[in-house]
Amino acid sequence: MPATRRLLVIAAVFAAATALPVQAQVQAADAPAASCRAQGAFARAAYTSVEPLTDGRVTFRLCAPEASEVRVTSTDIDPAIPAGFGGGERGLIMTRDAAGLWTGTTAIPIPADTYRFNFEVDGARVPDPMAETFSRERSGINSTFEIAGPEGAFQTYAPAVPHGAVTRIEYWSAAVDGKREAFVYTPPGYMNNAERYPVLYLVHGAGDSADSWTSVGHANYIADNLIAAGGAQPMIIVMPFGHTPDRPGVNMLANTDFGDDLIANLIPYVEANFRTINDADHRAMAGLSMGGAHTLNFGVPRPDLFGEVGVFSMGLGLGNPGAIADFEQAHAAQLQARAAMAEPVYYAIGTDDFLYGSAAPTLAMFERAGIAAHYNETGGGHTWINWRRYLADFLPRLFQ
Image (cartoon, rainbow, N blue to C red; front, side, top):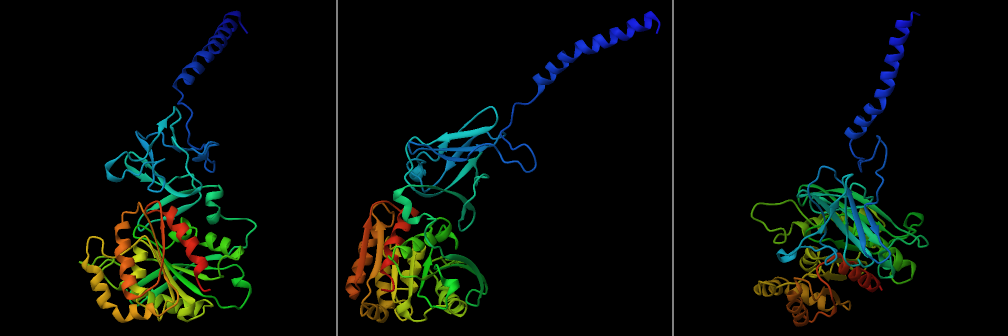
């Protein structure tokens, strides 16, 4: 190779070699910061979205690089996560790092129990994308998490305890001319024997859905643990959808649609498809909030159908004193029949519940009718923390 050409080649190679570090530096300077997003089609993001700390506080995390404001919201965890009732502070404010990961830690511990929550991302409610458990509402969905501890053990899955099964059923309701759903708990051993069982019809509240008594209420685990300890009779628990299709000008409680469906369609379906004992002594009804109203309207006046009833966080007469007189007049004979029964009406409410004012007039109505009542007054408000405990207190009283 001529000397001149050799020099040109050497110069070109040297120039390219010396340029590489500069180019690499430019590329490094232009490269985006590491992202909190999972890298790869099937990769899992490398963070924990809900982390209980050793001191009882809880840290929440969410990957949202493009978000401007993120907070944790819940109506179950106040005051650790303010619910914002009455216009106060709402939610737990989170802070963003360079990778787009938002983090927030409660200032105070969260007691052992089960909770629903969501993230609010720039004003939009977003379930936790890293969650493994969820709970439906009437519309929308919540993420859930559980803090383990002795206080919540009664409603926790216990590996050493025999467990029942929860089945989702669909049935046609002529009463509302539509397809309906319910969740049915069958006790441990149901699938391995030919026995028949008593049945509790257990109804959720106005903000909830048919899955709520299992997804956040843990009714199945509460029953499992009580049955295993000999504290409750093995039973079937039917959890209906408490809402019925909207009708113009008709309040969701001021109509008989739910009761018509329950009595004419759901109960016959359950009794045709599950091994039930089909008499009032082995059939009970209970519910929380709206479900408590359904129990007052369609359970208490039907002692021929439901031998035992339970009302959680609901009463009559609050804001409408005439409602109790109307109820007594409309159901005079049925209340007299209920009074002749040995089993008391179970009635539970918290002193901080916004419906607490309805308790005294409702209990007074029972007393006037000669109906015995077991009154369980607790602290706390209109929350699942109370309702799970009411159920745990109610189940051992059934079918004795």
